[in-house]
Amino acid sequence: MGALSVVLTGLLLTASASAAKLPDEAAACQGCHSKDGGAPNPRLGAYARSVHKDLSCTSCHTQAGEMPHGKLEKADCGMCHADPAAGLTASPHGAALKARFGTVGGACGACHGHAHEAVKARDPKSPTARVNQFGTCGGCHADPQKTPAKVARQEPVKSYLKTVHGAAMVQGSTAAASCSDCHGSHDIRPGLDSASGVNKTHIAGTCGKCHKEEARQYRASVHGHALADGAKEAPTCTDCHGEHSMQKAGSAESSVSSGTVTKTCSACHASEKLAGLFKLPSGQVQSFLDSYHGLAAKNGHGIQVANCASCHGWHDVLPSSDPASRIHPDKVAKTCGQCHAGAGIRLGTGKVHQALSGSGDGSAAAGFFRALYLLLIPLTIGGMLFHNFADLGHKSLTGDLRPMRAEEDPMLSGGERLQHAVLAVSFILLGYSGFALKFPGQWWDLPFQWLGGEAFRRSAHRAAALVFVLLSCYHAYYLLLTKAGFGRLKVMLPALRDARDPAGVLLYNLGLSKKRPMMARFSYIEKAEYWALVWGSGVMVVTGAVLVFDTMSLRLLPLWAIESARVIHFMEAVLACLAILVWHWYWVIFDPEVYPMNWAWLTGRVRLKGTGHGHPLSKEQS
Image (tube, rainbow, N blue to C red; front, top):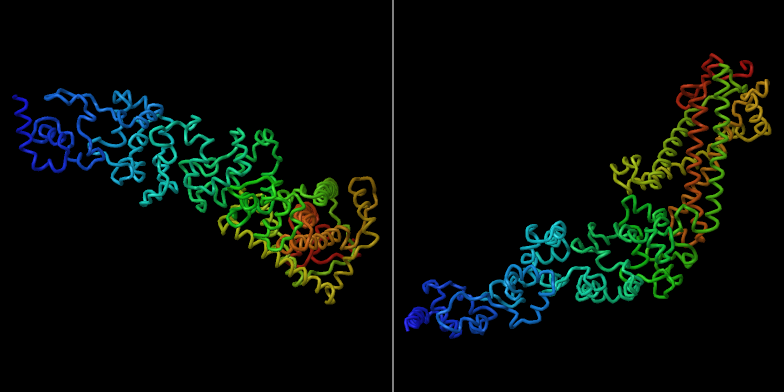
């Protein structure tokens, strides 16, 4: 009776405040379990607002049926929530929670909060509400002491908050994906577990709960079919978008943005192992990187130029043999036409990756020109080196610096010197900016990066090309329509002696002939260089125009012609630059007759060491 009196006294003290809010049994229990009742206070004040408010205390605390009662065992939520408890038991969390709380069912409060305060999961006040999950899960997973080291190093909560989903959640979105949307609620399993929602075979379905259309397209794609057929190497959503690093596709930080998607695709498609395993075409990535689009992308212009997804699609990547594919021969022209209006059906007839690559692999014609230049360049430059070293050796060993030119050397006029200066500046800038495009990311590309990046390099190259073209037009006018220019043209025309003189000079310099040759002031040395410049200028202007006006070229020219133009433009530039270094620089700088320099380009006068005069050489002085 004494114990009953204590209970009745407690009821009288608290009934007015609690009876209307709590079930009768709970109100009775509060007689003791209250601030003034003496027994532990189990937060019964919040119980009336909890999801369990309609349950009696003994529904969970089965040992509390007798009064007074001693210390009770922790309530087991699994008595009512059998399925969640079973899922939790099978998860990696289960063993850890059981060790900590005695039963898995007794561990629910770790996530849901105290049972007397627990509310429905969709209630924004619930610790397991989607908007609160990153904080609840982070209670352990952001603490290296409470989570495995491998997981802690990945900083899952911190990285999630930086993702497109996490950022939206922080801003109050209730639709953005939270922890349980991907990992599940109670039956959370590691990604390698085949039953896990984040297992590779299930990720498309997991993401597809929100991204339904994207998931449908993926399942129908070449990647989706490969994964469904058991190819674990095939990419799924997280392989391209990332997991806890996922950003908006339009963000520069995203792995599928315009500027980075090629790198993402290359992770698989540049792998020789995967190419061999799945019998994929080899060299596709490199051929793209060598193309106009790839070079522009490497130079920081990847946002504007075509990338892998521009042509192949995103989630709906299909093999080229599929009529629905964007790269099916019947649709290539339409796909390319997104950027190159009216490009024409001819784009569907070549190897698109190799097209415009400069490698010559896209067509037989381009391959022919590449092979031709690979033969022509070493023969030409090698011949120049042999000729010049023979001349240098003879002059150095004999000390004979008497000029071999006997005819009068007209002064270079101010206008001619100005033409030479404009030619030199435009040629150097063209070569420099062109090779910076072909070989980006090197130390020589730094000035362009400092001055504005790829946009500045492209503008500089085209501006120099325009100056070069205008100079060429003026020079043609000068030669053909002015008296002074026409006089220059006449002395620069090839003559029969220009075919004989090289052999005579070479034999004399090698010591195979004692007859010292005498040549006109403008000999085969100057003529060969001049007419090579004229020829090379024409080639570079024509091929450069084909490449600059690419859309028009694609509309009017066959693909092999455009591919050939790119090969020729690059190879001719290599030949021209090497010829300037080996041939021109020798005769105006390193030739012992004029060393350290022929100053005619500044003064208009030639000072030859063998004459002792600072004026043009005459026949009588030879």
